[in-house]
Image (cartoon, rainbow, N blue to C red; front, side, top):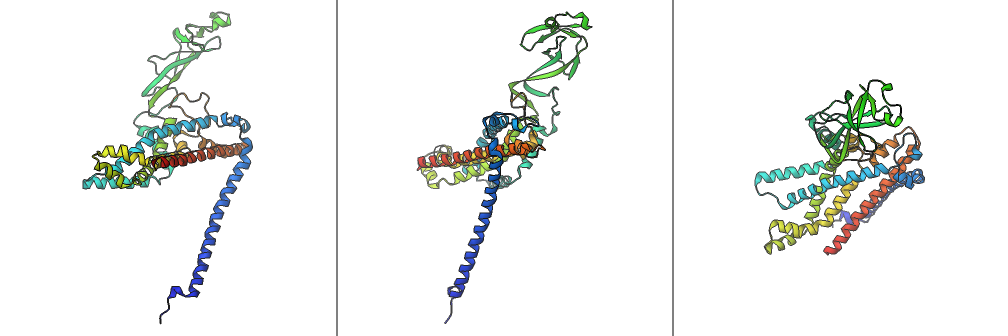
Length: 399
């Protein structure tokens, strides 16, 4: 009579012990991960919660003054960059996913090419973000060195919306500006009278004199005179639609680089949402005489919308927390004196501000960075919650 090895009470008891040991090991490992996470969060909350205030949320960075610093510009910069990133990555990602899933080629070579593209998209989703930062630096900031590099207050080969002036100081100790015209030098010497604009926007003729004593004694009148041969520096005023190539270290370069980071994620999540739509729905639409595009637009996309929107929002939550690509493309900007005037300006963002503050020699900035981390975590929590709510709401409607 043969005995079943697995039915033996002794072996069954041993298997139960091993199963219990494995369950305990999994529980301990999971508990360790939770304890580490809770410890980190508790440390951040303890050190940063006291710094949270309206002044901190709306303030700006101040050198060697952590108590007076804030993240107002960083929050604005992060929001603007994420909006630009979403405007570029989400339409392209969804369109690519629709093409790859619903318009698959029948030709053998094209099918091979389709598979190659799909494989590369999957691989790109796992590429470290700093690699995208280097790619953005080469592509957007320097444009493969096809054009001269951008220098402050120097002519740019290709630009739109820039107005160039020269600025100089009058004998009345006021600054005035006059149009640059065809002159491209960084600094020039005043040799003739110029039609200038003062700080109030009034236009007047700036008269040149050889000596200070040749100008009127009245301080108000001296504002209309300057010494002959005095230097004037080139100044560029940017309109809101100001644009130039190469893009340089600008928030637009940062937004496009982050779009590259999240594009594979948007494509893959959109593909999964489209694949989840039952094939019977497509077949029913085709059976009623609908074209392929009508099936996609009227049937597939509405059913896949919850998954697509969830993936898009989660990908944006990754973009808003990325520091490495922004550091590579735009540098460690902590604040700007004039704010954001165009997409070609630099701006601080939350992840870079946290990184810079955490490494500052002033210990007070460590607490400020903890407060900024709390704000970033709250933003991420809100974005993830919105993704869940949108998914549940659309799923109920479709049901």
